[in-house]
Image (cartoon, rainbow, N blue to C red):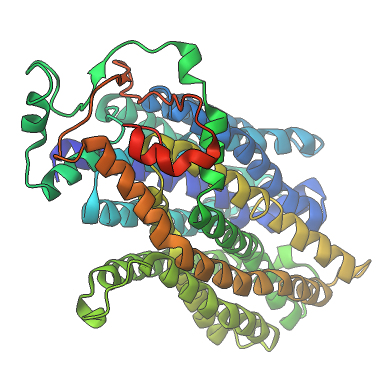
Length: 536
């Protein structure tokens, strides 16, 4: 791996880590937030919902822009917005909860610019097995960042409250740590990351498969002054052309059955994961208060221990889950190790389905064990639940990059993020909170609070099982969509393994491939694969 690519990967990983830390610093001090603003469970869940609403609304915009303009600039603007919004939200007084909600929403705008664009960034830098490993490392940031968010949010708040019994706003210090690190990542992004050419890694991988050096292929077609990592003639492209054909992009995605099924399945996983990570620490604190006859969960003295434990198992379980899922999928696809002689190109969705089916009973049993006050066993099963849930994080994205052509990966990521968050962790925490409030009624005791949350958790449990079914359907349709994507790559290069350049232009500033589908109807999509150099 080249040093420059490695530096870029580390910087993007650090930004991803901080983004997920920020998402869950609030969850680490959630009971303090509820007490400070005097809100119920439904409004506490709405904090996460409004963040995701802003996030998902701007994700498609960032995805379209990311397919057409300089992605580094898009990420940079988003990071600046994120840092300013997070820092400002930590100064909102008790009687301005609406302002706090709005700023948490603006945080979602900043994160949308990064979450959509960064995977396509990496997909254009790395190909083949290296891409799978890189995405595995990149998505370690989800569990590690989430876990650190709980720990840092709770720990910094506890330091601020040390020796003070009247500090109702000390929790605000818990969300001020991530913006400080965010400034450092902005500086690193400016000086350490360069914009890659779209489709570059796929082109280089195809060149290696054909046993040819990419620069030699290009020299057969164009003047030697053409850059080695570009397979097309550079020419300016108008702003109007860059924004054209979004309709064709969406039609392309709707005709990709694997994309549809994997998105539905992933959405169910996101719903379950989002509600678990948002409500589990609060539910455990309520259970501790109930079993120790404490009248209010905010009076529990070892909340830092709960946050530290949950953060620790989230980090460890997430790392193990992402690593096991990626390694198992790679081995299964190649038919090596424990899968020797059993290679299967459907490995990505099958591994994801296994994770969902394993997580379903584990989540149910862990909640029941908390109810029975078997806290240690509950922690153990929660750890195994998180491992199972995280099996799909990297392999789902790897599958997405494999079935989508390079110049439509941004919009594909954006649409998947939009749907998964709209019906996943945007609505999940709010729905679970609303169910909890409805079940509990006017009873404010920790026992009633805990049991109402347990009942509310039956919903994500059912959805986890359905996500496994969705991934199995994605496994069924995967070979066809992989073949269509491979046909595009072969047709792009030409039957002799060289790049086809006739009538094709690329922007000099962003390496963008024009998306002119001509007048072909969606029903002629297969013929397009065989007749157009760039657009299926």
